[in-house]
Length: 464
Ligand SMILES: [Zn+2]
Image (cartoon, rainbow, N blue to C red):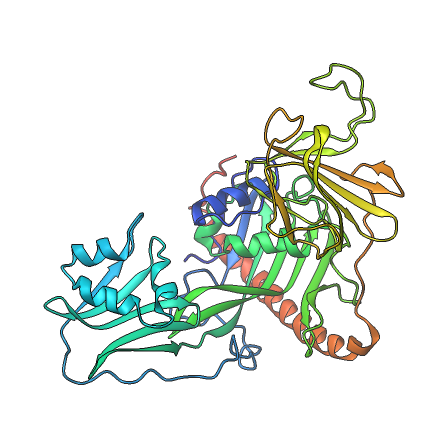
């Protein structure tokens, strides 16, 4: 990982959120943020931490372990080797049967192990890249280990009378890390090399500042960000990033700041501005991760099928069939079913006279019924082209007292600020986290001149 390397980020045009593999996620980031200029990321803490310290000078030691689960120490293996150890890496379309055959392992043992209580579910769901560690003696299984969650390992051992199973807990340690960047050019692709993970950038854009900054249109040269976030380690090995704890983004000279606050009773777990205002609005601006807007709100649109002037009373978001559609805000399901040109449609009522409508779905979320309550962000259905649709897209409407408003521009009501009972705890946490953020930024800014000088000869032309 290079410090202070100049990186150029690719820019397309539209915000998307993605859970695709890393490469695709970076592409998504490229789509997300129109970086006009090169992004200089002074990455002190990257996705591939080495042995050098990746924690803030003074704030890391008091972090809790995540999750705060009791530690079960794995039983030490016997001194005498039980047999040959093999590490099996699952490939595409692999099944346990196939893997066992390939390695000439006992299929009888496999059948016995799979029939142990609770084991089948943890063993049969294989994904490419999963690892299974096996000790065998001429094909007879002596021991099998498989990670079943971030903190748990399934452990099967051959005992006196058949196989024994146990689930070992492997604690995850969380450390605080930070990154600071100045946007000079576009091109996200090399940001990865400088160490800011796509997850972190997407969190900034989607979960924290997305309501205040239009990341598809407003990000520009000279914008800066600083982020303090969690990095997760298991047995000293980096396994991924956790939550963003504090962040600031300076957009066109205006600085937005936020911290993550979780109350002791877990009633609150969200991002707030320094004064306790929520960073969230009561509604999502767009209720899905879309690839582009295929038709804007337009009271005088010529209808593509009917070829007459007919108002377009919503926004059409093009997205692949099957893309998740989320409830734009907390509310109650008023309608779920089929309605003429809308095809499969869901209508939500949110109180305050506001309702939202989601049309052309390929299918509804399983179990969704009229009268149910839904939370903002909950999956209500999937993009399709049912009804009068020329291709897969979501037609989305936002109504206030029955009157259609433009969902892209309608002022969205703010979510609740920190309430009085939580005020003191919030302020204490805010002081702590904003101090971390200040330290992170100041350290990064102080380090800039030397690093820029040392890289000036090698910095590549921005790939715009
Ligand atoms: Zn439409």
